[in-house]
Image 1 (cartoon, one colour):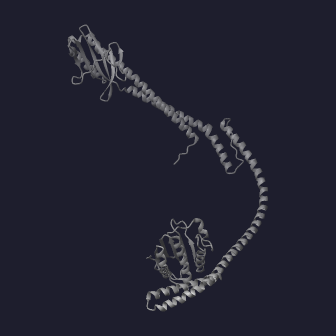
Image 2 (tube, helix red, strand yellow):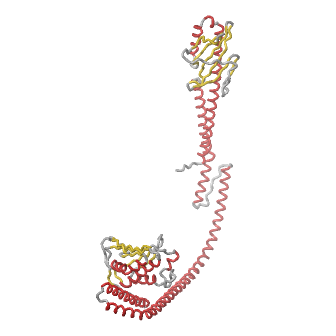
Image 3 (cartoon, one colour):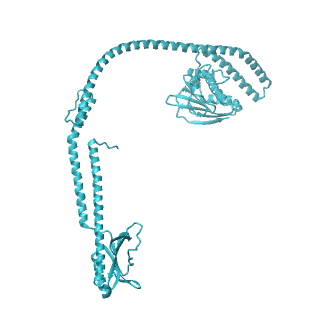
Length: 531
């Protein structure tokens, strides 16, 4: 969730953040400088202690009187100073350096540093006094100084080397640092509180007055004015706002007067436009209906002429074919297969004649004779009828028929002609073979039977969907354009509808919906494959 802060809190947070940064930087620098000063004091003190041991060794002639007094003295120094970890005292002899005394007999020996000692890579070698050399080293994770002071005695020479821990805790300095930080923090809090009070006094109240006036103006009160409490920037903003509101109020009054005049003109113009629109719409609707009736009459007239010519042209050949079929049946009275095929051909000839007559009848707007029929049985008859044609075109048929489909009220020949038109379209769309799927399903909500023809052919272009069912419109090179138009006429005559389903990725799909004759139980599908 986004946090919304006022300008006052933003300024306070900015000041508080700035003071916090300054406080932290001041505390850090104070602690750093204090630590450096303490380390410098600690270093100088440690050097002085080592030089003192060297001088006392030379003064008391510890090399000749014996090392016991020397050991007691350096051991006292290590015990009294927590930062001194080890002290080694050496005497220089012709045979080399000899360890005279040490506070760590079991520890490693400390190195001897002199003027010829090489500095390390950090440049930490120092020579604070003549004959005194020191260097920083790291022992057991802590920083130490190794300090070497030369011993110059009349009876011999040598050196003192001490290992001193660099860090040294000072409680007084820690308390001073804490009090310094508390003082800075208190000063920062007091400054922020004073800034909050001054901000509330000189900025928040005038800003609230201006915001309140702006809110009233936004709600429609154009007489709202902000009080001018000072001559600073906020006062300038308040005066500018008041002048702007006065200008807006004057322009609003002028706009209202103009709108009153314009509304009068608009009312008159609106009435005139509405009257002209009504007249134009009525004329357009009448013209459109006239065009539709004329186009339909022309198409039906063309269909009637074609049907009459077709009936006349095919009548004589059909009679001749029918006569020869009867002779063929009499010549092979005992050949059951021949008799069966002759019967099928005669049936189809009669169907052709009825189709032509039905076409002529539809041009005369005669309604078909609807009778109860079994849709699934009609589909099975259709599949048996088109089986040889489908096999010749290498087309496989899958039929999913709802076995609980109730009876329909329909014309058997008309529906069969509709189905044949759809199957013929699918055959034309699959010249190289394919799959044809026929499905029946009972739609209980609308009490209708749904029949779907789906093929795997070339499909339908989106631009062709709105013209498919128009007479004499076709996408085929040799088509007449009457197949789907007749199919729609048959579907409408049965109280149903037929449509092409768009959005199919492959092939074409046609869906036919017909009203049922009676109610039926819950549907269950049966799959039948016909090749």
